[in-house]
Image 1 (cartoon, helix red, strand yellow):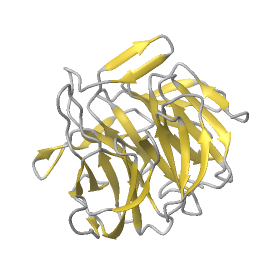
Image 2 (cartoon, helix red, strand yellow):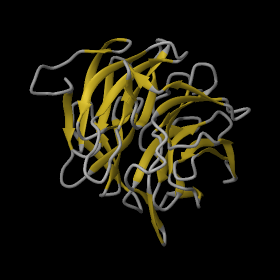
Image 3 (cartoon, one colour):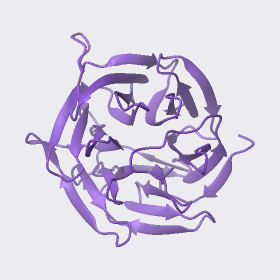
Image 4 (cartoon, one colour):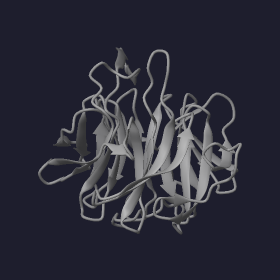
Length: 308
């Protein structure tokens, strides 16, 4: 952590970092209900105000930002710590939104799939076939919770498919292998990383029961660890933001834990890669409201529709 650099502070539960071509970072502030930009000098500006619970963010094929909006959280705040709690009374429903970064205009693309409402869309990753995969974490209430799931949707708003359901511990981080043939999903409450072979847009190869969602277990994280978002490296390794233990954990496609980078708080929620060589990691430290960066030991994967 000696090389950790704080780029911005005072953010209201940052998540969803996206490295932009000009060297700035777009991210969400879930508690502030905004999408923000952090300039290289640390200056913060607001891109859009979608309301609800802006969560996962990605650059799309049209230069627009695509957003998983979880509909909002309740919040608990004490000195130096901000954390989400249960579904709030003003929960506005889950949805997928498109944001024009030039004007801040917000367009709602999806609110349901096959007549079932989206509950808490969490994170997304674009493929090279006109669409994106996304997770739905579900919402948690005082005495019950929703099942999570994995979906595929066309970027133009024309088609949405439920690809894997249920993910009882909540589908969270999502990513693609470098060849685009494998989908990775982090399950939050169980501390499990899953994979599926992709057969086509919205279609995954499924393992039979008793695997309820058909995935293949890549890694069961040790001890009490909850999983959040993830990023894939150019070599195909999966870097998972690991809650409770406060780490970024690198896992090989074969399931071996290769590297553990300790963070200075218990809720590092997301990681993305940027810089000319993709060897700069940008990490959101959410309970303390910080965006940090550090040199990374391997290059991150150039995502579809992102500039190298």
